[in-house]
Image (cartoon, rainbow, N blue to C red; front, side):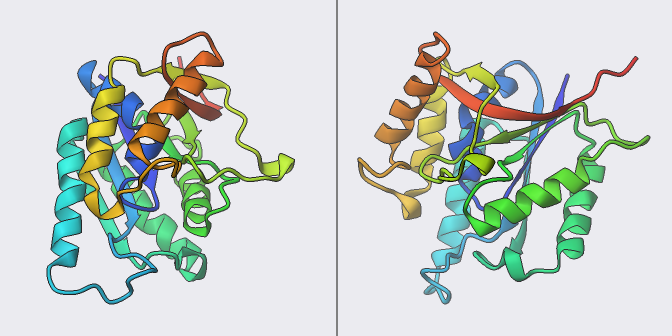
Length: 223
């Protein structure tokens, strides 16, 4: 059994970036854990009304149940402020979560993602997953968030790992629909239809009906 840790900035990032792959891993008998840095509030609503937080947290819980996640921990930091948060503090908090779950595989944001929160979390995940004697992490991969594509070649998302998700794409879309507060209509890149089209395009690029794409950042083979 493989223990998988997903380190994300926001609720729904795990679904958008790797939902089909995570559901596939769960079906294969693996444990998937998620550490989310930011709470469900957004920069658009710094002071949400009564019941909003509870409703959005319930949406995230519903998505986790659909994907089959073993556990989700939210650090509940303010949204869109991670670039001002002490980096060492964030790394320490994520490291505590990782030490509890002792993952074999880690997924996180791509380091070149133009979203500040995504990029900060990616950098923190790299620090947490760095190889050392006590670490079990053997694979570190980054995912993409549809619609958040860096235009600069130096930091472009250039996938070298593709996972077929034809049997779990509907699970991913069901989890995405759970985030009703973040619902988008086509052709928004995070709408269910666009996410399905994106998976089909990533799959077609490598001869598969549907796939999710990743950049392999590190892989270790131990004796």
